[in-house]
Amino acid sequence: MSRPFAIIGYTMLLTLALLFFLPEWAVFVALGSFALALVITLILRRKVFAMAATAGLLACLLLIVQLAMVYYPALQHTAQGVEIRATITSNADARFGRHYYQLRAWEIDGQPVNLRMRLSSPMPVYAQPYDDIIFTGNIFLLGGDDPDMLQVHRARGVYLGTFMHRWVDEPYQVIPRDSFHPMQPILRLQRHMQQQLTALYPGEESALFRAMLLGDQSGISWATGADFRITGKWHIFSVSGLHMSVLAWTLLKALRALRVNDKLAVCACATFVLMFMALTGFTPSCVRAGIMMLIMLGGELFNRRADALNSLGLAAIVLLTIDPLSAGHIGLQLSFAATLGIVLFANRMAKPLHKQLRLPKFFAEPLAVTMAALALTLPITLLRLPGGTSLLSFPANMILTPLVGPAMILSGITVFLPWPPLMWLATQLANFMMWSTNWMAGLAAPRLQGDMQSLAFAFGICAAVAAAALILRYLKRPVPLRYTTLAVAVFMMIGGWLPSHLVRNEIHVTQLTEGSYLVSQGYRAALLGAGDARAAKREMQLRGQRELQVMVLPTTQREHTAGAPELQRDIPIALLIDTIDLPSGGTRFGLWDDLTGILYDGRIILEWNGRVLHFD
Image (cartoon, rainbow, N blue to C red):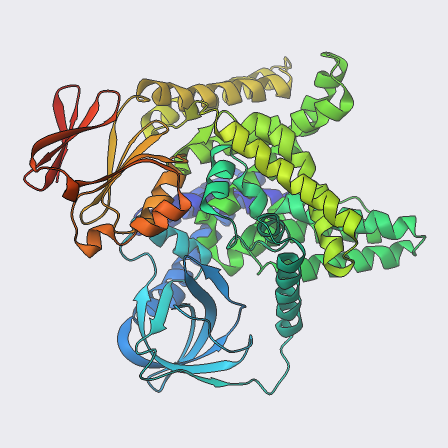
C-alpha cells in the first residue's frame, strides 16, 4: 500500500467535514456504520477499504472525545459578573472599533479552568503577550445569536467570548510575566513587522502587506475587502500554501545562490517555516502548508522525494487529531481542496495546453493550476459561501496570483531593509492589485450560486462520470484523466450557474436586527434601518455587493439609526432617505426599477410588480 497517509487523512477529513454540519446524533450513526464496514472489509480482506473504515472510525471517536471533554464543558462556563484570571496569548487585533485579544483562562471565580477565550474591549489593554490579567467580566458563547458565526467559531476552536463588566469603576489588573515563553519573541516580531509596514506604507498598501505576510486583515477597508471578495481573491489574505511556498522556496533558492551548504540551507528553510507558522498564529491552512513543506524539505535533506498526496494526507491527520472540529472551517476545506486539485491535475492539464493548444508555457502553467484548483474548490464555494462565486474569479486568479509572491517578498524585505526603490516597487504592485480588483468588481459579472438540490443532482452526474471512467479503465479502455476532470468541472459549474440564472432577478429581504433589513436583487442593495453597521456590511460582502443604492432611516430611534454614520463613512450610498422629512400618509419613493417603498403611518411597505414583499 503505497499511500496509507493519503487514505487515512482524506477519509478523516471528508468524514469530519460532513459530520460538522449534521445533527450530533449523526456521529453515533457514522460510528456504527464505520465499525460494521471495518468488520466486513476485514472478512473480505480488502486492505484499502479496511484502512478507510478504520480512519472513519477514528475520526468519529476523536470528534466524540472533543465534544464531550472540550466543547460542552467550555459552554458550561458562560456567566455574568465573574472574576477571570487569564493569560494574554496574542497581540491586539483592532477591528470594528474594538480591540480583541486571545486569552487562556486558568481561574474563574476561584475555580481552576483551562479555557481559550476571546476578550473584546473598547480600548486597548496595556499589557504584553503572556502577561497575566485579572478582571471582572461576562462570559458568553461566541456566535450564540447567529448560527453561521457559531459554526465559524466552533471550527476555529475558540468557543467563548468575554468583555470587562465594569471598565471604568473597576479596572483590570495586569501582572507582568516573570518567566520566558517561546512565543514571546515571535509575537514581538509580529508587532514590529506590523508597525514597520504601517510606518513605511501609510496608505492602504500597508493593510494589504500585513494581510499577505501576517494574516492580519484588520486594516483592510470595507470597500477594498468587498472588491477582493467579489472577484474571488480574498483568499490571498488568508495565509496558506501559496504564501508559505513562495517565501520558503525563495529563501531556499537565495541561500543556494549564495553557495550556502545545501543541508544547512534546508535546515534554515525548515526553521523559517516553523517560525512563519507561529508568526501567523498557527492557522489551520498555514499549518497544513507548513507540514507539507517540512515533509518536502525532509526529502531534500535526506535526498528522497516526498510524495505530495501522502504529505497532504499526513497534514490532515495531524490537524484533525489535534482539533477534529477544524474540519468545518471553510478556509481549511478550500486549502486542502485546492492543493489536492493542483497535485492531481495541474501537470496533466498543463502539457496539453502547452503542446496541443500551443499556449506559451508561462501562460499554460498558471492557467492549468487555476483550473485544477477550481475543479475541487468550486463545489465547496457554491455550498459554503452565501454569495457564491463570481465568474470574475477565474481571470482574477490569472492576473493577481502571480503578483502575490513578488509583493510579499518585496514588502517583507523592506521591513528589515527599507530601501526606497524596493518600497516603490512594492507600492506599485499593491496599487495595481487594488486597481485591477476594483475595476473587475465594477463589471458586475454573473455569479455562480448553487442550492442543495441542483448541486446534489450535479454531484450525482459527476459520480456517474467518475464511475464510468473507472469501469472503462478496468475494461482496459481508459479515458484520459484530464477529460474526466473537465467533465466534472463543467457539470459542477452548470449546477452552480443554472439556479443562479433562474433566480437572478428575485428580491431577497434579510433581517439584520430588529427594525433593520437588507433588500437585495443581484448586485443592487437597499438598507431599511441602520441599527447594526457591522451586520449590514457583513451581509453585503457575503452577497457580493459594493454599494447601497438606497438607505432608508425609517425612525428617529437610536437602535434603528446607530450604524448610519459608520455606513455613510465606509460604503458608497447613492440615495439617503430620512423618513422624518416625508409625510406619513402613503408617500412613495423608488428604490430601483419596479421596486417601490411606501411610507404609511410610520411603517414601510415594499412593493414589487404589484405585490407586497415586506411589511415593517
